[in-house]
Amino acid sequence: MSRSMLTVEVTKQFFTKNKPSFALDLSLAVGPGFTVLTGPSGSGKTTLLRLIAGIIAPDRGRIELASKVLFDSANRIDRPIPGRHVGFVFQNYALFPHMTAVQNVSYGIKSGTRSEKRDKASEMLALLHVDHVALRTPSELSGGEQQRVALARALASEPEIALLDEPLSAVDVETRGKLLDEIEAVQQRSGIPFIYVTHNEAEAERLGQQRITLQNGRVVEAKVSK
Ligand code: ADP
Ligand code: MG
Image 1 (cartoon, protein in one colour):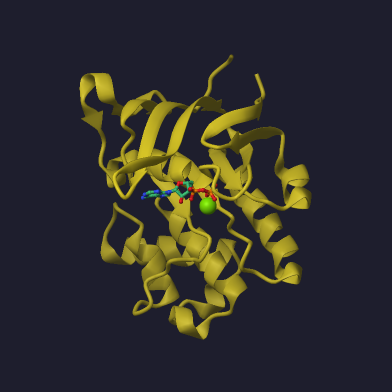
Image 2 (cartoon, rainbow, N blue to C red):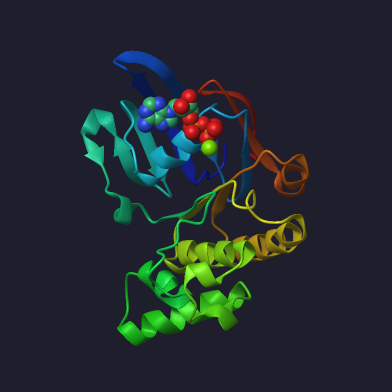
């Protein structure tokens, strides 16, 4: 395989009432561009993204992104979330309710002065066509607008990978197509890998040069560009 941006080789066992329940055990490699992550509900898609982002830790294994080790149980490396440079977009937006759109986006930007951060945040909102709602709080936004702001926030931090967990599932069908256009445009602009979780076959077809399918915590199909 040529230059792959993300490699994951991990195991993670969950327990329910002290009994082993779900186990994730997989190895995969993901290159630049879109990788569609599919699989039935409960197959481990969200768990995989949370392991990559550093929200939870594997029991053992190794995760490497752009030649940087994010996690390595053998060498006791577990890089904290901010140092991983991962942009995460959740299914249900997860914006800070008490902050305006532009404050939400500024929050993800680490470097620069206050006004530089604000300018950068405004630029990201404009890129996703929601600059006109910059001063509104999430409760004053439609579902599609909230998801655009969530995308702007995830990408404003200039991540080295974007993880999108069913980002359009709570958005109406009409908005969905347009938002998918924006997501494709932002991916092309950034050039980084996007892991995109979806159950929607039309979305998968459209984005899926690379595809990984999970079943019961394991990879059952991997179509990855060489
Ligand atoms: P998917 O995103 O593919 O629908 P998830 O990764 O959310 O699946 O969940 C995979 C399995 O792991 C499910 O059976 C879920 O109940 C279980 N699970 C997820 N998080 C935890 C946890 N923190 N503790 C115990 N079980 C969990
Ligand atoms: Mg999920």
